Length: 491
Image 1 (cartoon, one colour):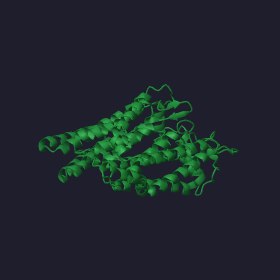
Image 2 (cartoon, one colour):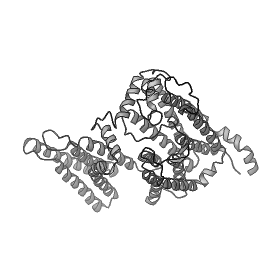
Image 3 (cartoon, helix red, strand yellow):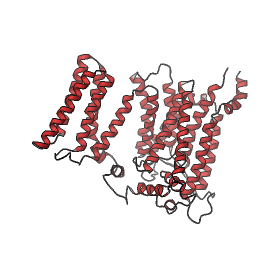
Image 4 (cartoon, helix red, strand yellow):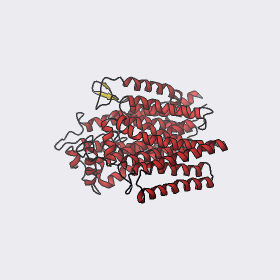
């Protein structure tokens, strides 16, 4: 009966709560505070608990986050399903209004300033987007095979992304691409993920080796390799999605045979740009695929032809985007990451100093508050975006590995909880949360180590600040409340 349910709701929630996840959350908060304390500490400072220090304020953010988590657990889990669209709509309106925010912090208009308090709506829009897409995909009749349904799901993801890009906060906008991991779990074809990976390969190889000549020919190695990859990928997709081995062998022989002849002719007879031959071969592959699509009326041929055409178009537009669309600081960061520019005193300074800090930690680290790189403030943003370098310097390889293992346990636990949900709403939301944590971890640690571009996103539960800590707590505890409600019997 409703009265009995109301009386037993809180004990039922506490009994059903996943305390393993709560334990990992508390451990990450503790390690995060220790790292903030180490990153913001100045030699001779004895007031690490003072509210005037960043370590002291982080205690306030941690305390308020725990209280927020408790409030979320005490709410009815049906609230999140019922008001998912309302929450999403309010956050999108707030994101849109923030575009016209007069306060600009480090070139970004993503912060709302209210006296001493600063909030970043983009951090809170993550849980709102996760709720909205979970409700949309859990509706009766939804299927990933229906292109209208799939387009609607993508629209829910891209709308806040566009608003955040309008705030000049590209790094936070890219986090929303993590939702595609959830879409893949729910039935999105793997070809979408492969296409995204292929585009990254085209961009990196094409830009990095564009000026490198192939042997003694006037051929750009970057362009040659990318176009050859387009042809090989298209041929492989014929094997996978058409299952026609004869046509696959024919295409492969056509591509490799003419490529080899062109290279030999350019090397030993008359030097010329083999890229033109590669363009003709790509056009031939696309034409052959379109012909087979029309002849056999098998749509997969057309989709593969579209992939090949889109790949070529993307590659030749990448240079324009890099040089004419991206902001100068973004362009420099990518060039530094790809090794095209050194710039250790400019765009590459942060990464270079963080690598020194992590490397100097050795196996066991220098000890709490004993890191020289961080104490002497060599690493900019060392208590926010680059806080992992403090972990590496003070706790060493063992401490860094322990933190990564904790995050791995959290993400795997979230995936396990998502799989045991009795309803699709909970499973979709759970995978959204796991994907967001995985994206933040991979990109943040990668940019500190110089493996990924510096896009300025925080490390969950470690980076200083209330907005990110509250945002991640909202994400996690809403899911824990949904999971805790799976065993409650309502009459």
